[in-house]
Length: 244
Image (cartoon, rainbow, N blue to C red):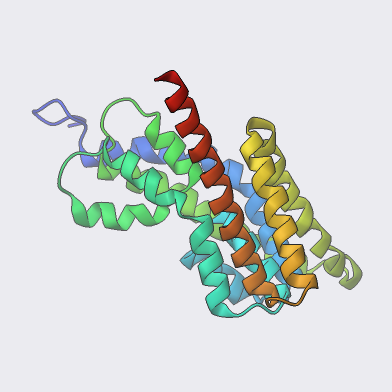
């Protein structure tokens, strides 16, 4: 039966609903994952390494950042720390989504939380009613499979491109970062301040040889974030004080 006695959808129906909702995400991942595979090839990653990164990490922005850091010869610890900072928002997304999930099912939540991305969160958060494990597993399965498959496909396509074109693909990495940054800058002045401050600090740390390339990025990101949040906090306190 499609529904249980309690009137709730069965796990199978939930799973089917999740897979249907995930199709649009899978299609949307096609150009981004394909580009990642192309850039991974130009950065010197093998096919196995490219697919493995998508299998284990499954985070578009973090994977692009990792490629950039790898090309700079950054150490493993710096890369892990940088991607952790970038993905701190996932704690907030998971907490918010947990409010829509039924109580219990801790083991299931621990499993499907791996597939929590900006896109899967947006779809699940806007879903009417509870977000049950069956739905999330279906949603994550489609989006995750799409990302991994298209990443590998991008690498295979890149392997067949002329050598000069493969080398020039490194420029696309910076274009991708700009493409990710500009929409955020349009929506928030805070994003502009963060980007400018982080770039300025990174330039100072790098050119001044204060820190190595990898640590310079980590330090610049943290310092810019702390300053931006401090300024916002102080302004809010002043506004609150004025209202009193």
